[in-house]
Image (cartoon, helix red, strand yellow):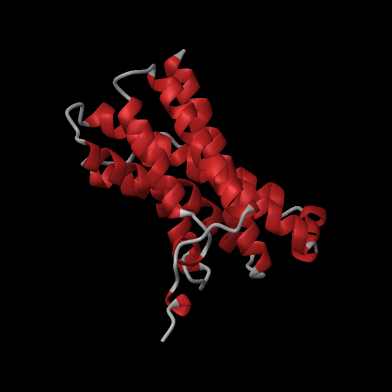
Length: 213
């Protein structure tokens, strides 16, 4: 049951992140290959970084193709002409779609990073678990933005990496107290809720341009 729950949660995050990558590729007017590559990078990039940090080689992505196939499938579906035109010409829908897909992916993969850390290194401390969780959550998005020629989302958007850090800390602190699956759901939920309220109430960290001379 736990393994099935973990797989389902991971696939939800994979679909969400793949969709965000494909949507960016469509907006950048990439061809089908470029869109698939972008979707694949954002969907599995954080997991690859996580596994390399933990010394798990080859990374899980290359051992089980279901994640890569899922990401490519999402990209192909979004490349369907009607869907592609809708994404390209409806700014509000695009913005909302990107926000929710990115938030869901961030929450899920932050939680899965913490989980994989404790599975691989049972004696892991808070710093390692949180670091791995955050890198898993934000890694794919950074790859997407760099490949698309944009400033990485985590450096300019409201409360992105901060939400991942808070979720990872809470997940780590609860890990020994609750059922792992419940910790994963709580962590993902907290990250998504924080992202929602940050967007709703315009929370953001101080920026260089805010400094008064």
